[in-house]
Image (cartoon, rainbow, N blue to C red; front, side, top):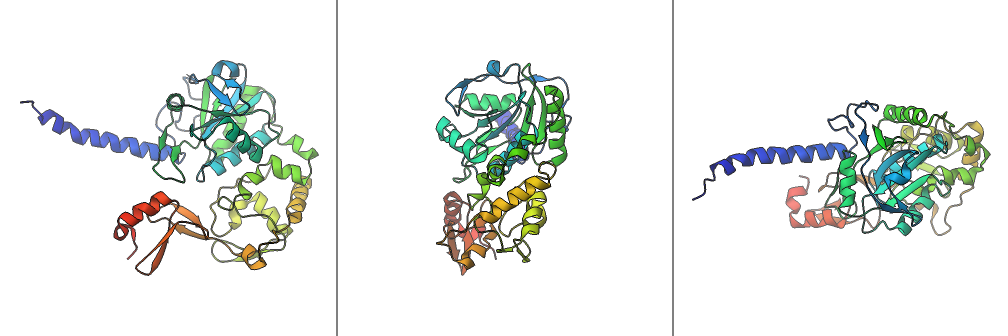
Length: 372
């Protein structure tokens, strides 16, 4: 008979290791640094510099991209997927902001999709056109399994299924800076403004170019600014950001119950300090454009926003109604509720869910998730 005492004694250790892996994964998904030389302690130049992992993927134009094809270029990388509704909209908004701040042709931007089955080159091309269609330095890569996981490990991050239908993939929210020799020179938390400022400084140093701070934007009109800044990427999807059609002069409900009229002062503050007056029902995912847009650019962008007509089919009271923000009782994540959001009534109370998967979990054991 086999001696199972050693095996049984190992289970607590294995369980502890598994818990550690899950915990570290959760921290990394939220952008918190992992222990180690790269994701460390926000020391973006910490040696030893690690070589970027090997890959061969197809970009949004159908061209093959490899680390060898990127040699001689300084590039900034991130991980995302086109249908993500959690961290990706804010992540991409900041990526586009970096593209506008760092206009040097020496700098390139590489986005690895973490959704191989759905993010085809065609899907990636549509995504790029919705965020920053004129950015020729932005490479979006359609990936494959298992190479995708090798690349993630090469950047010291993780990609894994979440089990949530509408947000099925957990992935890193960090940016990575790679030098001309293909060495990873830094890992930056996208949710940390100081880390992003260090990324700008470090990227300029590697490219040996000064920050252009959106010089080319000065030649553009309001509609072109709206496109180049990636505004459409969020604001054309009501689940991601408040719709802007007919915004001028409309009364807006803010978090906490206050109401503001969307006049010029409100629109200006929303662009420069978006978290200061968050629209009810929405999360603070929009970055600030302070320092990128001067007064003349702001005036042109605001004038464009004021010109956006409200849909004729939408009554005025529906346009001004704020969506409800609640906590999904299953995944415990904040969600914005709309008429078609999954929901279930239980013991006289209606519960809303981020997706059908969480709704099914609630249906399996409503007493477990229902509030007393």
